[in-house]
Amino acid sequence: MISQRAGLRRRAGHRTGTARRTGAIRRPWTRRRARRTARPARYALGAALLGLWFAAVVGFELARPLPDLVTCSCFVLAAVLLAVGIRLGPLRELRRLEEVARAVQEVVLRPLPARLEGLALAAGQLSASPGAVVGGDLYEVMATVHGVRVVIGDVRGHGLPAIGAVAALLGSFREAAHDERELGGVLRRLERALQRHLDERARDGHPARGMSQADDPLLEEFVTVLLLEIHEDGEVLALNCGHPWPYRVRTGAETVRGADPLPPLGPFPLPPELHPTRCVTLRPGELLVLHTDGAQDARNADGEFFPLRDALTGAAAEPSASPSAVVERVQRALLRHTGGRVSDDVALVVLRNDRPRVPVQGAASFLHRAEPSRH
Image 1 (tube, rainbow, N blue to C red):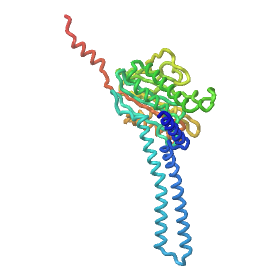
Image 2 (image 1 turned 120 degrees about the vertical axis):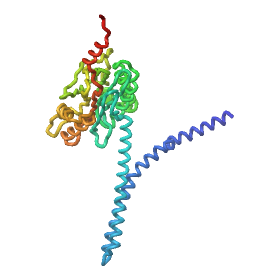
Image 3 (image 1 turned 45 degrees about the vertical axis):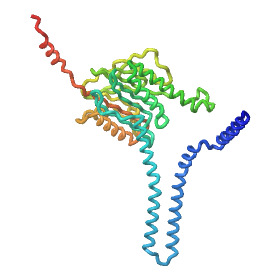
Image 4 (image 1 turned 180 degrees about the vertical axis):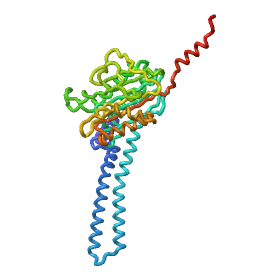
């Protein structure tokens, strides 16, 4: 009995090993790859058939002494239908890819709500990669018991290679914003999420190819991050890791500055103590504009930088200066400046304080009248 079982195991192991060597256990992947390879082949076959059809039409008409108008029209109509069918195939494929890209953006970079805890919100992004919807910029705004917490960041590089880091950081922020009492705890969670992402990438590829540690491109990966916490009275606390400071827009746009920024996440560890600093008090009706460096570093054909401050002042000066209108006008001005193409990803987040004003003077007089007389 024992020898029979051993023989069965050997025969099963032999079949399994044979299946691995022949690739039988990877049939689903083989079928998907075969389908992707067959699509260009079908398009090439259709183009060849169209060429043969035209050649047959020309040869048939030249061989006849008097061409028949009806026959010639039928040949031309059939050729047109065949050409349209060949053309619609890639268009359908492109439309499906665009739908997938929009779905990825809505999962990774979710649209912001129009209003959140008395704040009006809007955001927009321009990708530097042709055909890409999601780039290397990230942003999120969340209402928590600690206040409205905001993150905006910029992953080194742009396009598809940066999407993994964007997804890792946003997923960590969406949990840490609620769980961590202090803003410094949120930043440490983001640092750990980025480190895990880089470690997974290192295990998947680079060191396994015999690359020296000094030449590992993952050592140059970094992310600039700006964390904000907005309280009910409009006070804004900030932790900045190498990211551009935001603008406050009233009658004009002015740069908001806090303490000296920390290094970007990735190359260096965070210091032991993290103390958020008060950078501004956002009063009712004022705008706070967060952006990535792609907005201020964009250049035109003459090498001139995009005047972001002037664009914000002009966009907010118009009567319908809602956050969404400001984002749209700044993006249009940026595309006009660069000739319709940006060289780096650009993200804009605009917040407007729509909380009601507190009539301090009126409230003091009301309390004075409500106090009982001491005489």
